[in-house]
Image 1 (tube, rainbow, N blue to C red):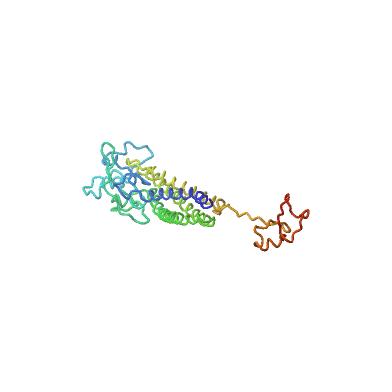
Image 2 (image 1 turned 60 degrees about the vertical axis):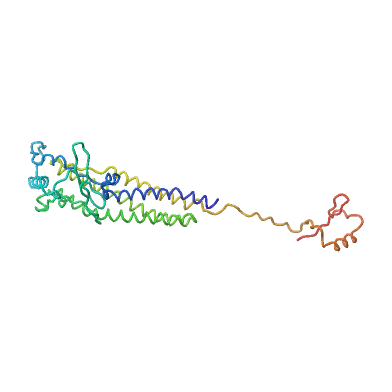
Length: 324
């Protein structure tokens, strides 16, 4: 029952590790396969340019509040991208950003989205609208206001830390799963696994915080700068929900690994009961005693009447031996 109880003790943290690993894998696989609906719906950030594409020559200034001004350089660049005859340079209806790459596509009259292109996967990927929208023919400072440029610069720098945190968390999760098997045999295995789980939880949590804050800031920048052009930006709710669910699994697994270091040692509770003989006691002699001849000889030397206090029972004589 010892090993069985130990296995039951670590079953919960192992199940939580697997659940957290699945969530992390889904986060890292977002936008990698446009044919897979689950991966297609997982993105950190989405830019919707459909309303601008519908009427790129519209007079936006007439519908703007008094304190908002249109940047003519940016408007001109966006209009050229929207009306470009080169399909590779055309402004698409939407752009979704994943961990390794981004995808773009069109939206029909029914609101159905169709992905037409996904970029190649890259390490330390960050989505640069200047390159994607083919706006780099002009100086970046002229295309985007200072607020937009500063937001993109911060996004580019922080994205490197986010990428590293996710990759470290991924491999630490694998290590936690493999080392966790040693916890079946002893609480020392649970102790080592707890250390790995703590490190994994820290990187997982920091990656989630970084991604949420970084893309939240990017959405705020897009909303403040590009909303007058009817370009909208949103966070991927499915991606963030999956990400933070994985963080919850990671933190919970670390807690249960810690509990397993104190409980369920795995040793059997059965103990051998040893009965010690009390010194100077009498025990019955096995029959026959000293063989047939020896028995007969002793019976011949015995007195006719048993001596009181030497182990008699009725009229029968029962020999005893003195044991120390």
